[in-house]
Amino acid sequence: MHRLRFAFLALLFCCPPPAGANSAEAPGYADLHNHMFAEHAFGGAWLHGSVEGVLAEALSPCEAHFDPFGTGGTHGEVKIPFLSALIGRIPGSAGDTGPHWNRAEGHPSFRDWPRWDTIAHQQVWSGHLEKAKNQGLDLLVVSLVNFEPLCELMVEKNKKFKDCSDSAAIERQLDAAEAFQARHSWFRIVTTPAEARAEITKGNLAVVLSIEASHIFGDGPWKPEFERAFDRGVRTLQFVHQYDNRFGGAAIHHPVFRFLFWLQDFRAHGHWWELLTPSKFGFQTDRDPATGTETNRAGLTEEGKEVVRALMKRGMPIDIAHLSEQSVRDVLEITRPSRYPIYVSHGHFRKAMNDGKFSVYEKSSPDWVLDEIRLSGGVFGLRTGPEKTHAIENAGTPNDCQGSSKSYAQTYAYGRNRGLAVGFSTDMNGFIQQTRPRFGNADETCGAETDARERTLQQKSQKTRSARASTTQASARSESFRIFSRT
Image (cartoon, rainbow, N blue to C red; front, side):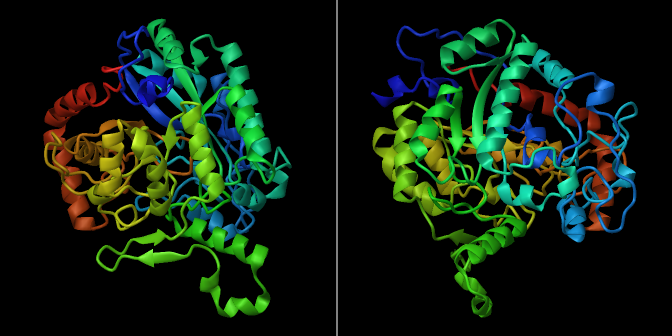
């Protein structure tokens, strides 16, 4: 019964459409998580560049002259100088945050950005997005994002917007999405499967609006805010983001977010003498001695359970991407009896990872969660990330260039081996890098491999296998993103 009521789920989750609905296939591929309007988040102080406008202006070089104190640029900096530079640094890249005077060149040469390790410069320009649409991108989930603690850490002189609240940032992005649609006829915000299929059939990009925020709906009654978001076209959301909130427990991952949650919790509830017992604040966890994974004890609150029921009543997809494992179990207690689909908009397969981060972070998905998604009829948005992975059977290509598209092929195969429907999830403009290059700069290619000798061997192997790899990857791409073949 419920499956026949899932207006929007029929599109995202490869469910049979309701009787009498348009059952035509919607070919192409999907990006299930993209922050194309994030220039309006974080006080407008993080990203340089604009999603639209003349190319020379939208992706113009930024002002990032050398300043050892980290206050000389116009963006990509926080009030703690050393932290600014660390945010964008990963193996194989010094990143583009902090005093990045050597990473400032955008148009016309695009020497420094946009590129795979860009996180503080615009990654989604309208002309490039339209080209992606013309080459097969048919469905885009645009996530309206903010993180209040990060906005409050931004250098004040760089802020374009003084109100750091999630609600204000989301409103700005909703306004931006509507204005963008008015100026671009190929970009169409959709609210039902029928609308999405119709727009895709016309050759347009079907756009689904989502929200991702830790302080979502503020502190007052949440239901009016929920209904207001729905009325403005939002059709999926993450009601828990980087840390625990009034609705439930968050999945633990990067140490920066652990620290920020600890700081917020201490400021709200602690006393100076309780610094002697720091574990009293922040995430309360259990550690699996066999795997090293720390899981958050917090699950859904009663309000969180009400949100889940509200999502079900509205036929909205339930995104579990940032939920703690206990929160996921609590969601399943509500959704499993009716087999209501759940999905992950952006994530990693924990057992496929080999990076010491997403191979242990709670934010990555263990096998039992993958099985629950599959059994519910859901889909998994697989992050196009730069991480090291295990070699996986049926990948169609050797795992001989860590962090590149070959590693992505391994993780994709892992999901398909478990019977999951898998889609792209770029998370562009979302503080995370993309897949690494296989050719070019020796410091970057195959850069997720931290052993220098092995990395050199991997780099050499690409020259002899490139022709065969391109053939298998083209085949994998054709097969991998037939998300809509059963809609």
